[in-house]
Image (cartoon, rainbow, N blue to C red; front, side, top):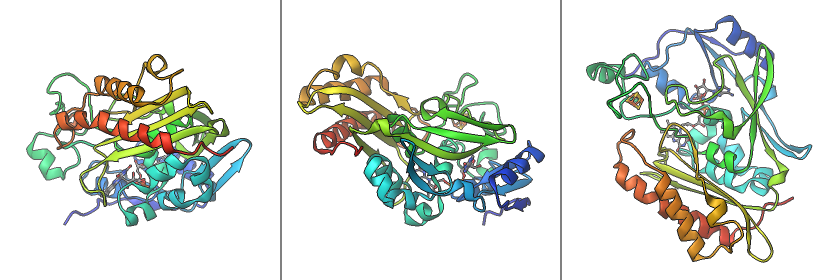
Length: 333
Ligand SMILES: Cc1cc2nc3c(=O)[nH]c(=O)nc-3n(C[C@H](O)[C@H](O)[C@H](O)COP(=O)(O)OP(=O)(O)OC[C@H]3O[C@@H](n4cnc5c(N)ncnc54)[C@H](O)[C@@H]3O)c2cc1C
Ligand code: SF4
């Protein structure tokens, strides 16, 4: 049996109290929302904070609303709620789909959208017990100095494994980060960095309070595809989010494709303006976009599944997502 270490559990009744606790115990504290990722990670001794601050008592992190030209989702809303909410399904159906494909039902009932965006990266050599990691001499991300994936260098390439961020990138979403110093807004596009040790620009003393999806995404057609070993529960081996403006004459006005679960951050496929924009979404364009994604994605052995196979699945899932766009309804205004 894996036991938790000793820590003090706080359950503040407001966001202000929560950020004050993060400031007071800086360096020895972590926020917890649904706990579906942090709890197993603490049992594996990947994190051993002396203080854990629950976000479940802060009403500022709850609620879903359409206001001021935005769909606003509180970070504390569960993935089940996000997947089922009529406003999310109407204005951001690819987000509802991605949330509904995270893990399994029990985990979606506990896990939150905020926890999903702040999810730690994952790796075969990291998501293991202390005993297992110790036997291997630990690794760069935690307690050691070698990366067992790259074997060289000082870089961790653990996989970004959350399903909602690639979708949020295609929808031009942003997040509000709150600390004792105040609040700042960061676009989801700028949220992630290619450092598997800490792969976001969020500081440890900041709480993600809400997600904002601009209504300028109205008219977009969107899609999300996910590859995993068991559809009932597993993390992604690969995920693909797509959004495109396609006019009444079926001509593509813009296209964004984001692929994730391969490296430490989601990757926006570049060069689509040349091969897709101004063309109709036909088989030739679909093949060209799928081939472009294949060229730009190079999975590593950061998870157990064969990287060559995961790479071969990139164009398959990009094609699936693009074929879905042909039938998709444009997002409601
Ligand atoms: C078997 C299994 C399968 C899973 N499959 C998937 C999957 O397919 N796809 C996927 O995306 N995830 C998957 N997960 C991971 C997890 O369940 C989800 O990502 C979930 O959304 C995490 O949310 P949470 O509220 O439980 O986060 P927590 O576990 O509470 O927290 C996760 C991290 O985020 C931080 N955090 C949480 N909320 C905030 C906030 N508001 N502000 C700042 N920091 C915050 C915590 O400090 C912690 O570091 C799986 C987990 C398990 C155990
Ligand atoms: S990618 Fe390397 S450093 Fe990062 S968790 Fe895996 S083995 Fe450790």
